[in-house]
Length: 507
Ligand code: NAD
Image (cartoon, rainbow, N blue to C red; front, top):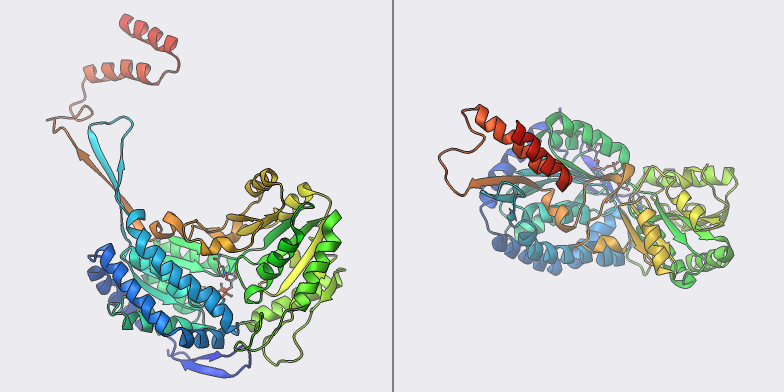
């Protein structure tokens, strides 16, 4: 059965900007077979050879920056400026990072056995084969081609299934990779909806999924049928805590950017804010004045906010704000779709008088909303921050460094920023991922490339004896020897060991 072509729409205007054929089940199978063949050649290339290609790819990206910015902006509605500051910056840095660091992270590790000194032990990392990357729409280049980079450096082939809302960025990325000299079929893109992603799970050797918690659970269920590894980078409801002694101006600026960048459609967006009572009003005033100064409009203008990307998402934002207002929240600015535009523009919004019976404080919003709640002290802030099924990121603002580190340790999240927000995502050296329902596995750091590898342990005998102690035949002498040996080795305390020797002497 052939599916109707996929229509890609500009979220800013609603216009159709492209129509693409959806991959058929046969094409998914063919893509996997072609990827497998390409990978057999690619895995033999050295890290240096792979890195060289990546650098060439970066040059081609640099030659096409404006074209890329146009494509990403057209299908996401985000400001072109943010394509440069987020997507392109991330890609350029990630390419250099993985080109340099992959060999170090995947170097064979010598292991010294604590007991069997007669063995040489080495743990190695090799490619898994074909990696399936399933992506959302909020960063259509970073979370497709960007995610593929460490998998490729590890020697895998990659098939990307981008979001049905934003497939054009991934297609362009893969085309530029091909122009850079990537072997045919090494990096492929499959167009389609969730069913195409499911078929990809049935073919791949590993799945790297980024998306919602609900879909992530489906992906995990399907992958477990084949017992293939998955990494799940899922949603968040990231708390920000502002203590009385913090630099309020920095905190307010961080809050506005951390909550509203990419119209709040960032997995690590600040989604709820807890402020200690003595500075609450001051902080709210600072945030509101800054939010009122933000400009919203088409992506090619000098604007801080563009349109949102997904119709479903803007409806969710609207419903959450409505629910909050019904339950007593006050809207200090925004709180509605932007009446100046027909597309998916939602005004940057500040909400106060919010509490945890409101969806806006419990479920991921993924939109340009800042709900701020007054708390009595750091303890209450921490309790509320952890009152969530999510655990992706968090942030804490205070001048008390000792307290900040203590609280960072207690916030239930995969990463915590102190006096900062969101910045951990652009530190590829540092592992990033979720606790609780925010996911399994890590991107970035050693874990961010080792997840694309099968780890193998190789044990080699060093002395070449004719027979090892545990080998056949089993004799009474061996058992007696072990009985005494175990007492000596494993009983705690020296006196007990001596006692054991005497007792075993007596038989
Ligand atoms: P989504 O879960 O709806 O879709 C993600 C991808 O999964 C899409 O490509 C979609 O086609 C595919 N998919 C749909 N049904 C599927 C199925 N049954 N099996 C396999 N794949 C299926 O997410 P979205 O709306 O595109 O993106 C927003 C979500 O992504 C948010 O929750 C956000 O927090 C999350 N996200 C997380 C991170 C992170 O690093 N943790 C980063 C960005 C976005």
